[in-house]
Image (cartoon, rainbow, N blue to C red; front, top):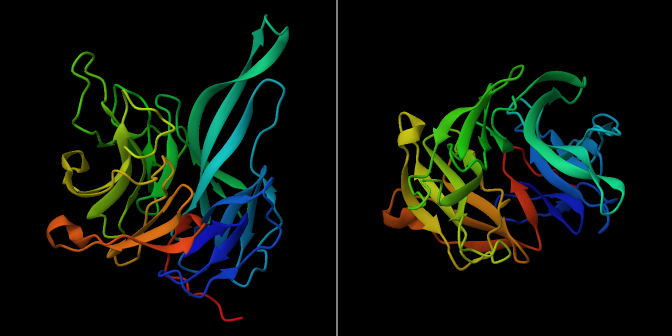
Length: 306
């Protein structure tokens, strides 16, 4: 498991034991974020405007690459990254900004234009594709080597979309929460930051009410675990973690390779873990495994001995 603690990338066993620091140059004002690890031990993480890559020993794979576009009219910001199962393709969650003239301040100011996912071989810096602009796409997580599951905040469409790797690809409905606003027919819940098990038989996602809820109040949010339907649009809820916890929109749920354990992080509290079984209520027993940890990601890679 990789995660961020005190601004640096760390690695530990899935139960939080044997924690070792992979980096030592993270700072409160410039921390690493969104680490991701492949089964072969390849680690990528974002820091500032760059993508960094490491082996579990801490040795860099390549020099840091600039991972954003900085221009006078359009610019991007990398919000998160997920590494493909083969450890080569970085699926990046990007915000695209334009500018508008603010007459009250007599200046150009940035404005969010779109949110999209692109796919880049981080070793060669060769682009493999990006999503189109029909939907907004965020929080990519790999379904297999050819597709990612993404979040859309559109109130009239499915909250979870499956997007294939390719040029200007459009996401297909993966799952839409059935709850609707009775007055408008729009989505009544936000679903964000989903991840499937490797067997693709279950997925976990942050879920919270869209209306009449103070976004700064994290207590209404839950992590909902679903049984993946065939098709996935027919998926059914299995069990719920929360409410009453500190689950944010970027809770980063991550499954163990065997699909029996789920980890996530909570704001101000750290990283938590629970078994997920076939028992009623999924046999959930949440416990904190890393105090102060953020954004965990699980894989088959072993923690190195130092």
